[in-house]
Length: 347
Image 1 (tube, one colour):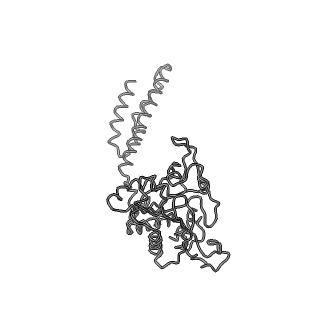
Image 2 (tube, one colour; image 1 turned 90 degrees about the horizontal axis):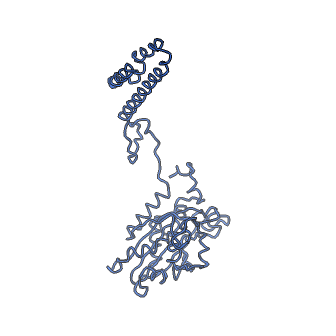
Image 3 (cartoon, helix red, strand yellow; image 1 turned 90 degrees about the vertical axis):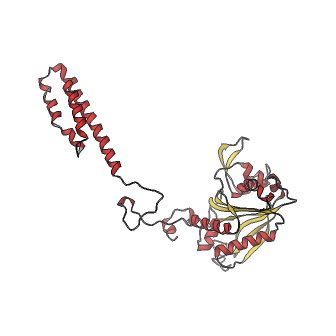
């Protein structure tokens, strides 16, 4: 047993000097230890053989540790945030085809830029929220029938009042938070001007114009002497900047609990121009209802501590998917969430 212990210490010291550490497992000293087995008393052979096996296991662990250290030292660090070298100068492990940004991601960045130039800050929404921000702060009292119009996805988790959390059906859930966050702007003589482009969810019947998961941009503007003409002019300017051309628009009276008066804002159909009664996008009507908008209801302003006798404002909610559809002539909104590479490669 003492001879085995001496051999183990000797071989462990030798491993560090070998170019191929695994060669230590074939060392002549191990063969010499096995050669002594026949000369031992039969009662000692079991313990002796087990001790040699323990020695080999110790050497195998040492070899594995050294090989791992060498592999790590030889590996090339990868910066996952760096662009790939498409010319092939990086190791083959990093070789890849040039990718593209998803059209929705690209267009959201573009509309953020347009609104930024118009003086609007950009905020993010939440993918799970409470019913207080989804409904109450937007002038939907408990039991209001308009709540049902949103086909809201409810979760199993509940808030402190026992109400289920929701997957927001509109980015308007951020309106109350924005009014509170930028309330000081009004006292400084500056407007509250913010947009919220983010993902929303509705229990929709899927077709060429409707998806259960899509993107919406909420816009909020509050200051002194704000009127509906400013709302229409802001939307017209944004859409013309986004599409790069003059547009035909139509504004119709509508109803939303959180705006008064409320409007539907529509664009002429870019696919059939109202000439095809079988058009899958406008259903032959010739117009596409693009967004809802209106003057912020006094109750919404009061809920955020803003005096509606002093300040007025407007708000709008626009489906980003439809903006992109109309810009690129996409006939079916479901393509945007399909993950179809043939579709995405066009962008």
